[in-house]
Every structure is written in structure tokens, then in C-alpha cells.
Amino acid sequence: MLRELGALTRRELLRIGRNPQAIFTGIMVPILYLLLFGQAFNLGRLFPSTGPASAFLTNALLGAPDYFSYFAVGMVGFVAVTATLFTGANVIFDKLFGILKRTAATPAPAASIFGARLLAGALQPVLLALFVLGLAVAIGHGTGLNGLNVTGTVTPLGGTEILLSIVLLSVMFTSLFVAIGFVLEQPQTYFAVVNALNLPVLFTSDALYPWGTMPPWLQSIATYNPVTLAVDVMRENLFPPSDYPHAVWVYLLGLFAWAAVMIAIAILLVHRALAPRR
Image 1 (cartoon, one colour):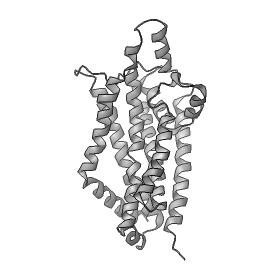
Image 2 (tube, one colour; image 1 turned 45 degrees about the vertical axis):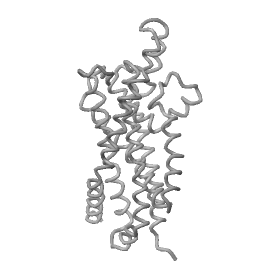
Image 3 (tube, one colour; image 1 turned 90 degrees about the vertical axis):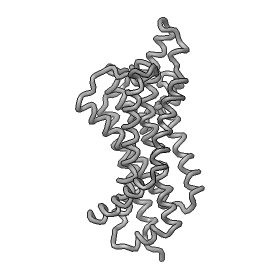
Image 4 (cartoon, one colour; image 1 turned 30 degrees about the vertical axis):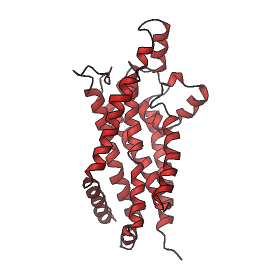
């Protein structure tokens, strides 16, 4: 099983590496978000630097020094999710061209076929998310632009927690979208379904919107949103002391639970999709 998993994973990685246009597009989208939307939509300019309004914004950002810093960390989570959207589309195109049928006819078990898609598909969003995090920090130095202002010292443990939150978020959504790709047959249907899932997940999280400005009902939903859990892990490490209600390990535990559920659902769907037809 491990040999088949390794061979199929290498195949998927080679396919990604041979498509530089997709890699370039994946890099450019978060750059445009950071340089255009993040720089233009600066909530700090809407409030005086001192007084009750400034204190309100500070409380709404839960410890982040400014809105761009809050937004930039949210973009890391945003990218880790959106970069997984095409993983399931690749499965559908492989169906249409007969590639998946030939792969399923080999001795490779269904677990290896799914695992290879999961490993290769999750690597790209993880690397892209780390790139966005580094870029957000870098653009604040000597450019005259707003940058990610890290207000604390990130320890090796904190860095591990940040990386783990990104990996878990990427893995859970890659597994979900890959499974949807195995179940559906047409690209149009796939993108309609994943957009119906993707947008509500992102916009009911605190990735882009300040937590303190949300109505109570939306805060209740966002509390259990996996994107919220991931970005809160990052913000607690980058902006200490923070005003988040739970410790980092609580959010990581929630991410592990979400990942376990999504992977279990994905394995069930893929197993059914690859089962021999009678």
C-alpha cells in the first residue's frame, strides 16, 4: 500500500509542477488581496487614533495591533481553504479522460488513490498559506505599506502550532473537496457545490471580519467554524496577550475533531465511488 501511495503521490506532484500557470495564478490572487483590498480597506483610518472609537476597534480586533494585521492572518486561513478548491476538479477531469478508471483498475487500493490526492492536494495550500504569511510580514518593511505587525515573540512551540493549524485546515478541506470530486461527474456541478460550501464557511468565520463587530448570532456560528479555529491559533501566537476566550490547545483540539470528521466522511464517499459496479 505504501509503495502505491508513494507512486501515486509523485504522479500528482509532477502534474502540479508541470502547470506553472496554475501556480502563478494561485500566488497572484493572495498578493492582490494583500496589496489592494488589505491596503484600501483600512478600518483604522475610519476611527480617531485615541478615544472611545479607537478603544472599540482595539477590542473588536481581540489583541491585533491594527486591522491589516488582523486581516493578513485571516488571509492565511482564507488561502488555505480556497487553494483546495481545484483538487476535486482534477478528480473529475481524470474521470472524463479515463485516467481515474485506469488507476482504479491497477492493484492500488482505494485508500492509496485517495491518500495520494489528499497528500499532494494539501501540500500546495500549505505552502501558499506560508508564503502569504511571510509576504504579509515582508511588505511592512521599507515599502510604506501596511504590513503584518507581529507584537510578540513566536517561540518554536508557537511556530509549530501555527504550522499545525495551517496543515489541519488544508487537509480537512482537501479531503472534503477531493471526495466531492469522486462523487460528482461534471465540472459545472462540482464548482456550484463547492462554492455553495466555500463562501458560507469563509464568511461565517472571523478570517476577514473583526470578531467584535459581529452580531451575537454570527459570533456563535463563527466560534465553531474551522477557519476561525485556525486563524485564532495564529493570532494568539502572533499578537499576545490576546483577548480570545480559549487557549491555543482548545482551538487545535477543535481542528483535530473537524479534520477527523471530514476525513472519515471523505473516505466513506471515495470508497463508495470506487466500489465495483454490479
